[in-house]
Amino acid sequence: MYAITIPEPGGPEALVWGEVDDPVVGEGEVLVDVVATAVNRADILQRQGFYDPPPGTSPYPGLECSGRVAQVGPGVSGWAVGDEVCALLSGGGYAEKVVVPAGQLLPVPEGITVDRAAALPEVVCTVWSNVFMVAHLRPGETFLVHGGSSGIGTMAVQLAKAVGAKVAVTAGTKEKLERCAELGADILINYREQDFVAELREATDGKGADVILDNMGAKYLDRNVQALAVNGRLVIIGMQGGVKGELNIGALLAKRAAITATTLRARPVEEKSAIVAAVREHVWPLVSGGHVRPVVDREIPMPDAAEAHRVVEGSSHIGKVLLVTPS
Image (cartoon, rainbow, N blue to C red; front, side):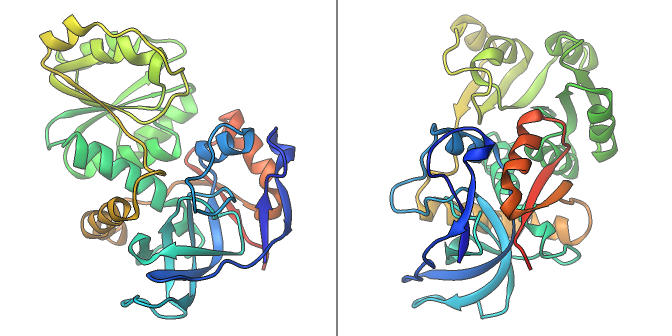
């Protein structure tokens, strides 16, 4: 098969489309012929040499994919050759074939094409596990997501609205904020021109956000705490703004607030499978019913993965950028 390899870490040009060995299916696994995958920030970090895949997993980038079942391994039930699926991966999505633990497979939802389904697994599992399983966002609460026009952000807006929350977003352009509003965002904050703490307080009569989903890390830590409501929950899932920040514990105590930091890629198969099962139960009916949809900016042929990485690093996109395998 062919896959995107990284012979040496570096810029987008480090991504090389080349012939590699086919993956071998093991106990409890399924082989998928990949139709599409999506570009995530973790792929960029891996390309740069900063985020190696977990031991024993595929060395190729790609944390999600969609395609068709090509082979079912020993001990697997519920899946058959030819089934259209999408999957949460530890790596390997940038390839023509990938082996997936059966518990990390999802059926392509009704009304979604098999290629567009590649935009779902990573973002839906990230949002559902963090915003709902960890932070327990409830109807009527205020939810703030930073980077509202990103793949994570566009899904977080839709899911939070689907459960009856009031949604605030930050984004860097008028166009991105308008797209967030179309998806259901109630409070629109241009982080280049406005102070999100002040804007959020004004929009919530001084209360703040009950739940914040943050991809910035250190840069936003202090202001995120300021923006929290009493009993608020801050969930950090990224470090785009650095890894070391100063925390005002007094402010945290006064608000009886909680801070949680999580990653998804390195979790054991059992934990990922539990998240996938929860997504299938709670989110897939919303997708099939048309209440939640993947937001796809563009599709690019997988051999041109370097172009896709340039797009994502430039942050000009809205939603997900997909890589499609050659037909």
